[in-house]
Image 1 (cartoon, rainbow, N blue to C red):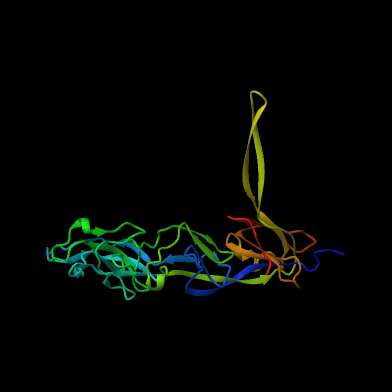
Image 2: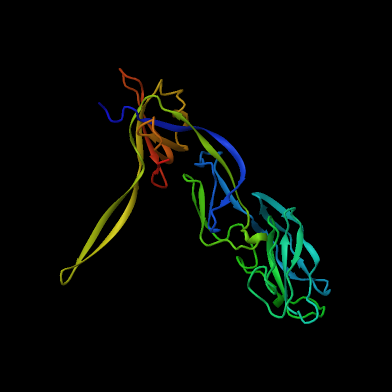
Length: 328
């Protein structure tokens, strides 16, 4: 009896658009996830991750007018909840100074959730702090806002802002959509940032991370076999040196996945029409049980029209990553 008589191979026959979805912080402000997965990469349905942040422009400078306690900001574009938003330039944006002996205060220049420039004032004290929300530190900004600069005052007397009082270091005073960088795992529905996002928003939360994506709609291949998932393989090479010394090195390569499928006519079959597309494949060793393998790659099709049999598709899966085992 064949151990694989209940095996089942499915392919990505369609896509279910999910629209723009706010990803969930796993708690470390590094990993963000979606409950729906995997994410499709079929042409026209590719997923797109867009954290909130500035894309272009938004330079904050002392006001051209020369007036006291104000700054200007150039026009900018930014992503807000995944939408590319244009923000007009601002002039003479009013800042707050401390009072009496509380000389030190930080003002945060932001784009609010409505796409307008807004200034959020911190709490004045006798010295600056690097702690968000603390007296003398940068203020928490509302959830949905983007920080584009900080202005630090050390005196209560009104005066024109100087260039030395404006701070716009990316990742510290300025939120860009593309910093820090991140890696994507469409199989498990998560992205991992290179470093933790600053907890700069109200209640110590990170900025919004939005993804626009579709999930695959799987359809079974009625007659298929010989499935082989894309897998890493490792090889060792070595070089010999004097005194019987040998140095080795290990290299890793990714092999193509493959399977065969029997077709109706090899012309109108739905699978054939998807050749050269990036698709998900789902393999169940036992269709009556939960565990399965996910493999994503470019579908290659080599057709064989035998005289006495249904056409055969010898298929390859050219992947960027090896297959994933799902045990749920």
